[in-house]
Image 1 (spheres, one colour):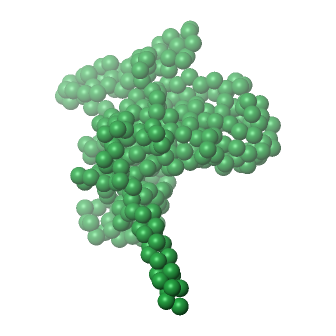
Image 2: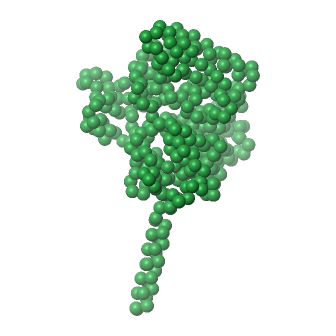
Image 3: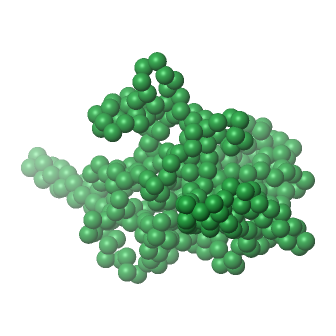
Length: 379
């Protein structure tokens, strides 16, 4: 009996040791120097040996923009998953709970535009937020924690599977074994960190469009892009949406929202129009240059003579800005060779090919809080 008790005690001790070893966060701080380091708004670290992208998180409870996009598309005009297509823009923040980091999307559909913090909290706590992803802490040092973001990056962030299902093109799911971070288009800058991933989907096609544009009917690969963007400062006055103005409005669920600080008897719904941050260098002058002109860059992939026509035609918009009192406030240039069109810092007129003739459309990355256009995008 004594031997049995000793044996059981030994097994319990071994199990406890094994549990302790596997439950401890992996220590990566000492290895960071050996990884490719991309310093920026969020520092990025590429572990080439393990094929993982590590993010250094040093900002908690500090909202920022998370933008998902489709960098490389499918090519079907009917399905509509185009190269360069922008996905949803979310205001998010990191929250820590012990060994776990949560990426939380704030619910901006319901707000209290008020200086009263208690009034703001009452609205905030009345409506649900969404946790987009949970990360495990794998190391920490000097106020920063490190998370492995690889699984987050290679998921279906663009809703591709749902789109194909709705089009009756088949049931497809991401295949992690055929997906990876794409480092050539992963970069970091002071106000934005840009990450790209190769994502492969597998399934059985049931429609008529998808098999015509992919080489293997049971799998296809796209590039998904993720932008982590510093929010702009408060020196911006939102534009109240006026349907008669011709300005594109943002309704409820976009930059439109319900303001519960509105006096009783007045409508709760608030809607903003989209606009760039444009200011005169000389506010008193009838015509003045802009502090920062609006510059659109034409995709280098556009063939001639289309490329030159795009630059010339888009430049005609400058006449409208001149009539509004701005000199050279709207400019159109060729995209520099070393610039990724997905970089949020550049307004882009992007050239997209499809298997059949299609159409042009516009959009952009909009600050959901105010309606400010942070990146204009024309396809």
